[in-house]
Length: 311
Picture 1: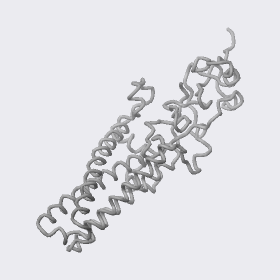
Picture 2: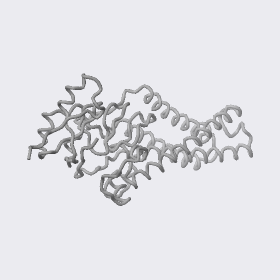
Picture 3: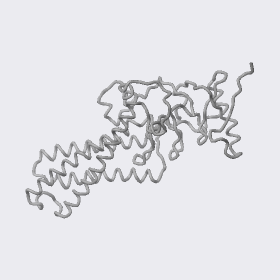
């Protein structure tokens, strides 16, 4: 029998002669190869991660401004002028805690490496250093020339392959992937809670002002008060619906262990099926604790897991 021949082909079917050199250095496989997670972890995983995308930066700034606007209306239009000190303290404290956790989750989701695969590592020398068995070859991404692990997809905005990429969210100016999905889920949850809380307070404030003199229930003029409350009501309702749907979608994806892209492309399941509780712990950490709800806690995403290279 002839010895196995390592074959090379460009997954984009060799567009142009300029890719000939890249094809010569990138190998591909007929069988998947379990590789330690440490091999494909980006060297910049511990460094600050920030995507320089104009649309994403604008959306992220808008997100913060909307939360700050809601905080302003809640504090200075509804709570500070209130005659009930206990009501103001309790609701002001609760609202600001939720808003702080929402913004902290947003910052962690935006500035955490979502699981980027190192660029340009699909070279003949590097693949040989993996000491693959005869006949085993690996797939590479033709866009970033990186060894592509199983369940990884290339993001055109981040310009990287992202492990377990769910989608790219402009509101957090980042991909939602293996390393930052927890923070994105917390962000949607806390924004939904903030929106619900503000809507409840707006309803109570309107009822209170209808029974009392409008000039006594706010430090602003009645027309300004009404406009500010209507804008907050519209903002709260819009974001409550949006983030609640997104939160439910993310929780469903985690429980079924199937990312948004995998559901959209209807990709064949090639990974082991686990229970819903195991999938939740893989994202939020093991064991279950209040740290699941903290954006300041970094979960263990399963360092013992192995990944398989695939197109």
